[in-house]
Image (cartoon, rainbow, N blue to C red):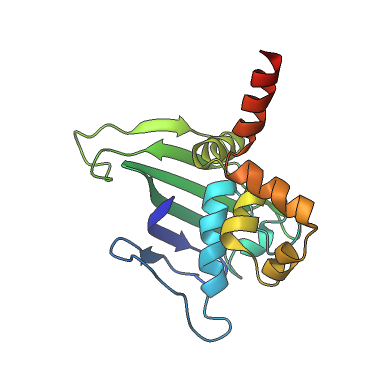
Length: 193
């Protein structure tokens, strides 16, 4: 998965609409002072893909994502997998004073060949609700929310924990992520024959 463009509004430190363009970046680093929004950009990518962030330790806790004084946060991520272009968008909306937030509004689309939904280009709707988007993204990327956070995002302080996991636990995760289970299935089939 390669990010192309991230648009966020009302999301944590990004009260106003902000666009992060990754198009020409082969390699990038997020830098800046504490509170500048570096982690919020990573959270926005994760939220767009999975409807949750790991920062709060509870997948259901999304109300802190809404900027103070706002009633909703919007996130849109355009990304590529191989030659295919996709767009995922989610909204987290406050449900009432102190009562949390909802993330029901979500959509996941395959874009036209050049990556833009311009007139004359086909846009294929892949999912139109929060759970459907999460499932479709996980199937496309081959990564669940937990795997994405463990192997791609590595929230602050979690990398050391991954390195200190029991070797068997690390091995199980890597076997699953790399699709190495196919060799166990091949061995089983060969033994049956």
